[in-house]
Length: 469
Ligand code: NAD
Ligand code: UDX
Image 1 (cartoon, protein in one colour):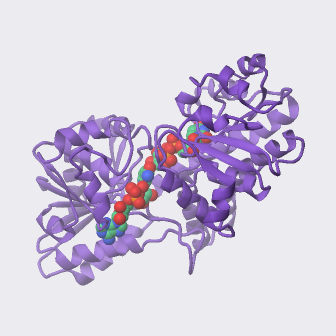
Image 2 (image 1 turned 120 degrees about the vertical axis):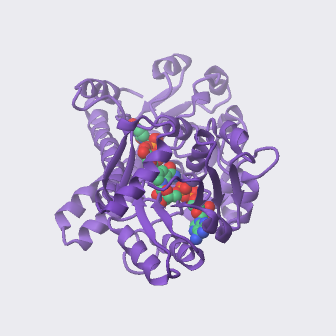
Image 3 (image 1 turned 180 degrees about the horizontal axis):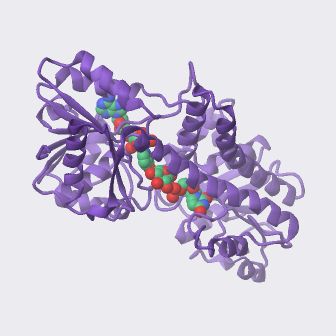
């Protein structure tokens, strides 16, 4: 196999940045250059005070150790492509917004332009690695593009190496992955390329955790893993509705069910609905793939996971309205948390936006607090989510503050949308003293101690609990 000395990563986002920073840290003998077309993103990665473009616990420490040593960030895509032996394609693959497959299929045009760029500028043979999450058989399209456009004498091996990191725990996930998956053609060249990439991971990942499989299995496994993880959440959220209607407690049900070693305890936490840039996108991608393969029953099966998630968000919003005496018009609601999960500043597909949009539809006033999300990001997300509202109208109904206690002051209700630990440490007695009465707390994350809050005087509604408010 090729001895990889120089790596280029195209795409300096949530995946390319942390993944290749960790490769640089763990492989000091390899030069890693992460490139992106977005100048301000690259400037942030290069910023002298390490104000990196994404927030991820432990990331700054990794970049501090490797940047300038064997880790570089640049907008000179062509140079980095040309110098490298191995290229990760780690660009975004969002759900298509228009055209064939709109709303379901993956928009592959970023992958295609990166691939075309590689073909256009490479003057020597390369291993090209799909890091982005893509539909099954995308590697074949990449091969065709590369082979039809490359310079004579250049040979490309294509690998699939999907990324399984979760935001908020990315560095730990990269340091100690459950597995690294490498897909290749089962030809001698394909297996050689696969061994070269396995050699890179071999610098810190135990051999038995590096799985080498066929290309199509690797591509499909990524969609499958996300679909099955999301399916667990939708299953538990579906049960949370039964709990609320019967008096059962979803935490007790999750605990009891998860004790079965065949099921296991992880990823069974009921919530206001899953968010993040991956789950919904990848399931819709799988649905679209199934439909294009003329497998409508398979498509409908996975579709239901997303439908259940939408139902959970609207069910939660409705229960807020019903509990607040069937009207929230003109009422003041604090929303604690805006990120799609704790320990990230990422807001893509966050349930918080859906809740706020639903509250605004009832003409409630909303005050938002999140410890990590940029204020400008919140306004951008809300304007996109409420296309019928002007920014001026939105700003009349929505206030963004920098302190959770201030967010709750004079409000009728507090809605917990993200499971930030700091919400546990809030002085709830002070919050209660300053709220309108009766003071309601709606816990969409099973975060707070409901009994303790009730003792203070709050009326508390927790997702998946059918107890009195
Ligand atoms: P992102 O939007 O944060 O980053 C992608 C970057 O690629 C952007 O900065 C963009 O400017 C850049 N880019 C696009 N086209 C380019 C081109 N032709 N040349 C150079 N740069 C280009 O996206 P992300 O969250 O890092 O996701 C990347 C891929 O990884 C997606 O396919 C996603 O599904 C997958 N993935 C994401 C996660 C996650 O937690 N975010 C986890 C696993 C897999
Ligand atoms: C996910 C996958 O976990 C990761 O392997 C893949 O590479 C990318 O997609 P991510 O979206 O970053 O990662 O975060 P994850 O921890 O999976 O959470 C996704 C959403 O599900 C969040 O909104 C989270 O709050 C929610 N969730 C998670 C639940 O509601 N209940 C749970 O039990 C777990």
